[in-house]
Image (cartoon, rainbow, N blue to C red; front, side, top):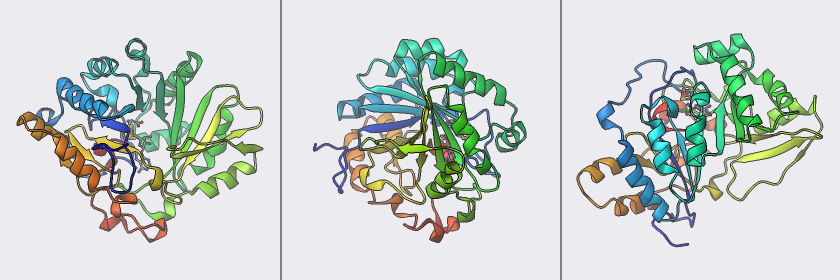
Length: 329
Ligand code: SAM
Ligand code: SF4
């Protein structure tokens, strides 16, 4: 399909992730810089109408799926309004959230036809959870996840696996999906501005599978053509688990994702150095379509042209990017 959303490598991008805010009600250490976090001014955020205008343009050019993210998307004052506005498009609407506020939004999700929710949770141990998030919401988040799963939402639970922090819990997460339709996803730890990443803290896809083999008999499931997660299922389990192996086995060849930050900048890759200011152009009454096309044409073949193919050679000091919390994961 030829479109302004096709890049030089023939990849068509029909999946847009939109960040609603860089603010958050948790303080996950791997996501936010420990120092000098400067939050965006409200006037720099896309308004609900501006976001809707840009989203509509992407849909017109072939976007089939929009995922709302952040920061924490549900702390944005206009979150309900934005979800309702996007509910009118003929797309799959999804959200990634830390789960703290989801029970307050069930009607909003229902009315907008939003059925797919990714909830991030990195530890089921209260002490570890508190030390990662700097907050005490574990019980509430677990309750919310189980409620979503029992009421028919498609629920993925995202766990960032960090060596020496929570990697010993992967089996407990899988065990949680025995009788509940939870899709557990283990994410390899990635480097972003100010998150103190080192390659030694990455627990790889292979290492995760080895840890799980000690406890479970599982088989490989078939993945979709653009899936970033490689999925498995334990024999007799209701749920599944998967690994997102960005560091050890990147999946750039089939990438179909682009990202719009809360301040209206288009990023052609999670690791891109460059970003294109669509919001200022929109506010100035300019045509943003050529900007979108040029951003796609500038997309590197792999890892934003920044990370090394072998993650062990990646020097986080040399990366030029935002913090994850202000990109929108
Ligand atoms: N606040 C929401 C949440 O936590 O789900 C949405 C935003 S958060 C930035 C989106 C996803 O990025 C979460 O699943 C989070 O765990 C993941 N993430 C953040 N920093 C990461 C890192 N350094 N490596 C891997 N995943 C990361
Ligand atoms: Fe907030 Fe999500 Fe980042 Fe945690 S991972 S600090 S919940 S944005």
